[in-house]
Length: 70
Image (cartoon, rainbow, N blue to C red):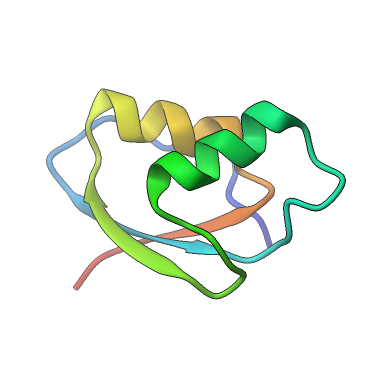
């Protein structure tokens, strides 16, 4: 279950969880996950849905799960 490429910029807080490995992935995708603060499968971070974060999420939608933070 990956995230579709339709995360929009808003004031919402997003919980981003890494669900797949970066092994065999492209270097820019590994760098993007690292920039989000994700190192291992199962790691989660909470970030605001600003333009930078949304762009990073839309670069690696198949590696992360995005939910609205509570």
